[in-house]
Image (cartoon, rainbow, N blue to C red; front, side, top):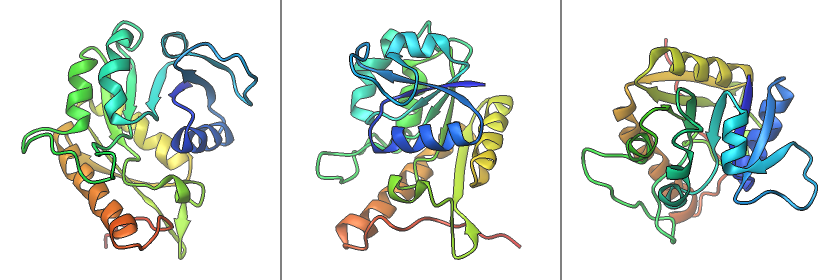
Length: 202
C-alpha cells in the first residue's frame, strides 16, 4: 500500500518514519512541487493523493477547507486518515457544534472518500515511542466504512500502537474532545507533551 502524507511538519515527519519503517511505500504531499530534496518521494498535494492508495492528513484542520476541495477526485474511493484536531491559535478548542467534528467536516469536503479518524490523540513528541511503561500507546480509530477502518486498524498495529475501534465516524467528536483534554493537561497545565493515553481492558 502506498500512503500519501499531506504535510511534512512534526506529525507528517513522524508518519513518514513510522510508515516507511513498517514497510509502507510513502509519498509526501506539499503545497507545491518541492524544489529541494527530501528524504522521501514528494509532490504537490494533488499529485501525491493521485499516486497513493491511502491519504494521511498531517495538516492543520484550519487548512483543510482551503486544500481539500481540490482533492475530491484524487481521493475518490480512497481511505483518508484524519489526524486533525479543531484548535484555535492558542491551542484552545475550536467549537464546531454539539453534533459535529473535524472528521465530519472533512468527510463533507471529501464526500467520495472513506474518512477514518485516527492518531489525533497521540502527540507528535511520543509517536516514535509507541509504548510507555511496557504498554503500547492506544490509537483510537473511528469510521463509517468497516473495511476502511479495519485497514487503518491494521496499519496502527503494524506501526506499533494498540488500535481500538470506537465506532462510527461520529465518535470522532469524543476523540477530538479527548485530544483537547490531552492538550489542556500538556499545555494549559504545563504537564508537557511526553504523555499518551493507554486504554486497558480486562
